[in-house]
Image (cartoon, rainbow, N blue to C red; front, side, top):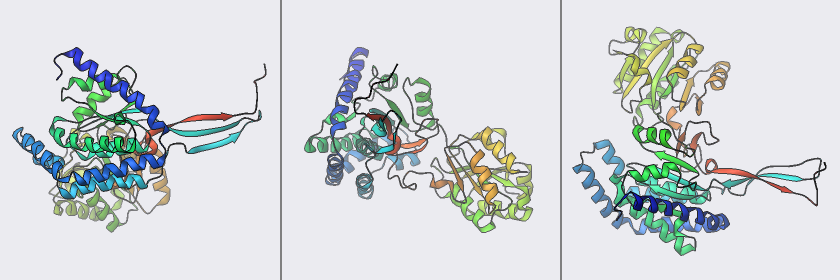
Length: 425
């Protein structure tokens, strides 16, 4: 047990040193070895199902005693089906191509040198997450497959569940002959440990990925001294263009908002071109109300349906994560793009239209990580993109933008081969 600041600092520095040392061993592991670790981890997860349910029951009991709400309790809960799903997700990553060592480009220059740009791991990744035990396995599996060592820092709400899932991976690593330090877990719930991670552990952390609520992500973005892959909010927009098919618009808008209201890809703002027609606008707003969605709108939206509540300025920049949608009736596609630029969070935006030129204009000009044409924003997910699992969605300017999967957890290096060339003066 850590008794003072110096003890905690030393523990964290030791984690970083072990992690960096482990990168050299993991870099030498081939695809078969990494896949063997993941398969063994999946086997261990299934074999530990009963123990995981008992451990999770302790987390649930503590969370209930702390007054955690029902939505968060559901994220914490593990049962046999969810544990099997976690193991299945690990096996899905086994089936994905190994990005490490892939030649991205090859060329020869006039000097006769042959140059190759080759994928390599990022190094050591710190994952800070809340409430979801499955992130322990997703993060460990993605990092291992992409050749990265990972340091996990879970919240106190899932400490027992995460500890046991982590143990499944360390046992798998030992059995296959790789260092346990390839997947480490911060051994304390002291919040000061997060601060040490964000400082980079004396240069041992290469990137931080936060998975959690706004408070966590804000702190990471403000305090981190290493690169961060993250998104602060998912203020996603659907724009119904004047040439939108009516049935398609209804189906997409209802799905984008109501399929799962609490995910980051859920629509929060609906923009409707006034030229789409008063009757169409009124019918869509009525359909939202019938689906159980509270609609907050501008004057035109309020005039179209009496159930619409007048929106206030703050509504346009709110991530509700609930059955609430802000609606604005706009004049042109330029107005839609300007609204998104002003209020959006650079996450995911969709246009519904049968006008290919308008769609191309929207897709080119909207500066978000994910832009869509004629589909629901709820497809903003690594699994739906064919990436397998994801660590999260990134909205920054790094190469990792949108779903962060295996390829996004790599960088590259240049491999240059010659036959004795020297550079002339």
